[in-house]
Image (cartoon, rainbow over all chains, first blue to last red; front, side, top):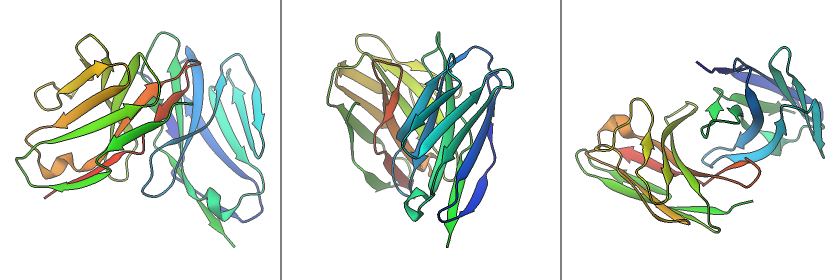
Length: 111
Length: 113
């Protein structure tokens, strides 16, 4: 079945770039998403990318997609304390209605 | 983007009771989803609720335990029945946007004693 994998933890220094990685197994994935979940809060859709794109940039966020390797990354430039959260990678294919989530990567920021 | 609200935002319930969670969307949507997020875990889809039809449940979830209503295109309810401590989770409502974005509500944090 489909699977989405992420590393569980990432620690970066404030002001540095954070890169959160994700791999997925479904070769028919059409939509790939990044969500942010702050403590005690719901999921915020940060950005998403279609499988026919290699890159998407939105302010401090850059998403890179390597479809051949089924690898997705989220880069956060100039990481701030407000970026501390759990980041979930998720994928969906065009025929399915449900999204498959990764386990989430907990990003912590050190001074 | 869709704006989604849920009630209650949190509750503490006794074992054996039931809780109904409401989800309201600010626009008409065809597909609504209910997810569960157990403590420290990722999200698991419970069921898909389309207006005018029975909800479709994922493996491991049954209608008797999680009855769902979808009376119109902006509202849905999820009931957690005969609760046990294992049902303690965050329950999230979600809708599909026009461009396949999927938006989530703020969640209902349920604790069962």
